[in-house]
Length: 465
Image (cartoon, rainbow, N blue to C red; front, top):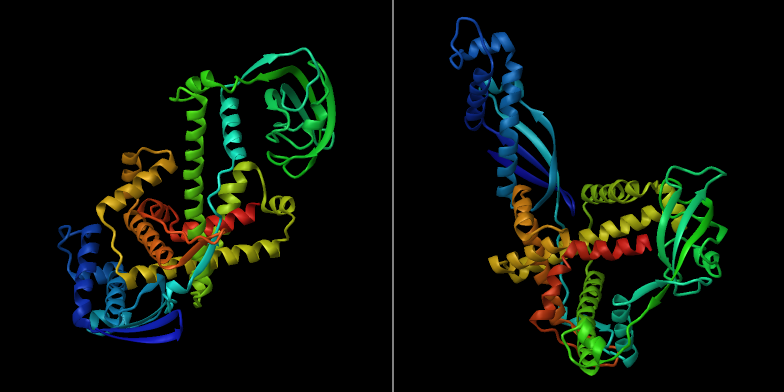
């Protein structure tokens, strides 16, 4: 086999491949054998039909098509290996010549165009400097944490008075759109804490001041359901007013809510827990800022087909996996976000570019630094991913293996290690001017900021905000 590589642009090449008959003959023989096993011809035993009879009865074209379908992937892969090309996605194979002459000893020629990884020049990681939030736990933060814990151990009691902010009301709701009640326009026995913002806009003002049995009507824009985005006239009826009772913040409460005997011990533990949370947040912030700084220092060409496919995938996922289950169309969603379709499409393209660029850059670091992934690292990552999926580690592992996704998980771990390498080399200071260093435990979170996911998550949050 002979092959030649032509560079079409920095991210796409054309392979020209010529395969002599001697190397094609095994595929031709295999084609006759396969057809032999699939067809029946009177007077011949199955599998013993001569080639000339197959040609006469079924046409040589069918045999040649089968032979070419078998040969093309094999010789394409061989040409890629010989050319030491790092391809992306599937090739566009064109200009297949000589098919009709294969059976007579002719050669096969074809061309294949395919995207390739762009060449990437990495900067000096030590030149990267970012600032993160300092770890400060104020007394107010500790007291807020204790108040949240009190809320968890609160109880409620019915009261015979008008509802006020902070109370819990049990309500029945009826929503009308254009004077009609849609199928999902009623809800009964809904428990709602006034001021929590967990129901619909306008309900707080409507129920404050109402006693059990009281009714109010207000207009609001529906955020979900079949009528999402439409203005609705909502009638709310309060069936009960309840008052929360919080336990006293004392040693007895500490013993009830924790393993500690005194309130002071509980308060000290709360402070330590908040410090650990802020340390984790600081590490995550450092990763995100270092990654953004790194990407800003690297220029790449984007493979056209890969970028187009990534954009279409993101659009499809948003429309069909996120919006459709909520009964929203893309137009309704964009209206609620105050965006035009052009603005949304521009955002999607930027997200796709950032995701692709992140993966390319971190993969380059993996290659340059020769970062490997051992079984222990892969297992730890799998356990974390399983926890996020709602499956047991065994169930998640089985799903990964059956889906052939083990290489994807290995890639996630490797990119996490690449990002940790950059963070370690970069200069990270907090808002108070102190240099921040991350030990192995905090660097572990880098693995969870898998390259493409990290970029995607940050971009998607901005889109959905």
